Length: 456
Ligand code: 4AD
Ligand code: MG
Image: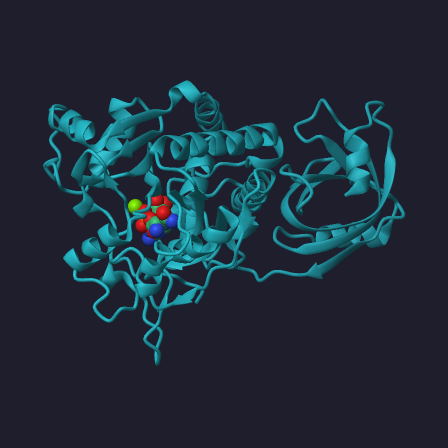
């Protein structure tokens, strides 16, 4: 890696020697006098291009070259490397007469990947041990790792404390009983959200967050639902208005996208299978997101009115009091707001979870928001939390919750040095899908858990 960095910074294009490369072959092209072998490793988004003179004066090497195949892992020693600013890839490796090529791992004859750009449908359909070896999926792994780092960095420098909430829990934060995974032989569940535990820890840290897997037994098989997904959750103390929360989210996402833009060359794929956004579409989206004036906010009331006046032939009629369907979310973000992100605020309380704070001027709505984006719909949901213990208890009673007192601890939080607070949950795979342009969150996590998962 250090030699590569030195080469990247060497404007004189001097040749340097490199003792060894360990990588995987992604393409072989044999011409009359020269053979090009592309190798993949974690160094760069571009393949590492190995150039071999077919008349090389070394019998062993000539013999090894004939045995090379796409998909093999190889070790190659004694190379020369040079910056090649006028070529597609930034540098080229040259095989020397003293070089040795060793095939570390051979392939089976039916190896399913090819040099040519294979479609996403095909890549999803083959044995899942292979798809991550394509440039597209490798870059997506890199993108996710980069995003996690930038999320951590941004929150760290803004004084947030990352905490470790439990995965096994007795509470059903979102009150969607039929989505719980029960853990036998206990009465506990796999968590659907860390929120209630974050609220607990908020009383000593006042800026808290976590990133953990959450589990929901979703019945529907869509491009935006997983059974196991990673949720970034965050709680902020001493806020009693939605505005600072929305401002914070906008700044946070703009920061992340700016970082993506800055590292674009390292992050974006070199090959785009059919059915995903290409580089230009992604960059246009990123540039638009970075502009704060492109972000919109609308109340649920107004959103329903706009939907009703839209003249669209929706499958579900937009009706006040009913949840927004994905067709409604799509129309708002894609058509009405012209492809920009939009916060929809103050939903009716029966559309949302029990813990949300009542809107002071309207007991029928709550101080909440969903962030909708084109193509994906909701990627973030959040709210102010009801901080008045009497109001919280009566809402829980109204919903028939807490009959066995299992959430008394949550109510007690409000009676012991509590403060007004709020927070949100962001679905990491949905954010990645949106920014990376893959159109399906099952591609944003290496081993997607859905009814049809192939690697258990
Ligand atoms: O809107 P949700 O259900 O909110 C909560 O769970 C809150 N307790 C979060 C909080 O305020 N701390 O989920 C939050 C986000 C959604 O906006 C979505 O991005 C993602 O989590 N999400 C899913 N992602 C993938 N697959 C699923 N089945 C998801 N369900 C929710
Ligand atoms: Mg939600």
